[in-house]
Length: 443
Image (cartoon, rainbow, N blue to C red; front, side, top):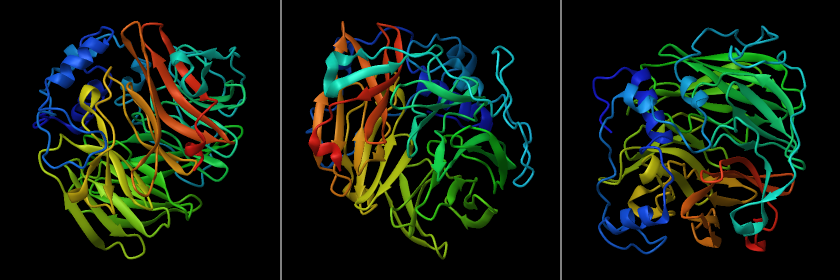
């Protein structure tokens, strides 16, 4: 996608629109997918090492106003797009302990921030032919924002248009909710008993909001200064490390945030605006992408750049980085063309393609939860060895009358396995419980 000459906000909005409205509004059929796959360079063995880069992943720029008029039939609400430009107002800094920091949409009747509210209950509904015991346990409307599901010790957290929600994984009910207009679609990050969300980002600072993990009462905020310009293609700009610190993409730098003290360190990244970050499980290495297909490695303690690798001709940009003991996972492309890769030892020269293009305008974001890596999408649902990239178990996702169904962002919480789910034909979207995952996926 060519975004030269555009402002950061225009690039960010265009990227989001590509992610949620990659094609004209219609149900995507399995015949469509077959045609697209057949039109590529040729068959490729699943999980085979890439020996020749694929081509043709980039997309032409479509006018923002025309793209914005497309009606989205997948579970992403238009509120996720509005959030890119509608909430850059200043927020109190750490220590002020405000009672409200997020602004509620004027079109939604909202409880006071920190007030507990109980959402409707839903009888479990078998979906996708019951693969891995899949049951839809929450299908509220409007649905949760796609791929914003995160897990804590005994709760699930997600964004919904205009809200931050806490969900009881046993029932699927929303048990706490606060008005909150997120910046983009970054999922919440759980650190101990608190939940952190990006509330605004400008070319001067990124503001993180802190909430109680139980009541979702506001606990304050941290303002992270931006070096240079923010990335126009953010995808995974905040994560946490085993030390409890937050790592935040802040333009041409990564800020290290102590939840109690604020920014404690800044690691410069000379390659350009940071689009995604991940921290190794042992907390010693920081992995960074800057949009192009280049992966940088930094020493967390010293901030020194200790490695880099790149791959040419693979795709438009990489993001959604996830670090495991065996290497780094991520995504490339958007919409119809997005797929997941694995770089053993963070070396892109050894790149392994871990999933096919997902299709249906949905994302294929890898998650590391419960000791394994999970890969969703619209074709297969998989759990993968985090050290080797080897598939442990896989199941085909059936189509509903020729229209693709989708599972995304699988999360293990309290011993249960959960995922976002959508079925455009049935107009169903929400939270699914996978009640019968294979023993191989237990980690």
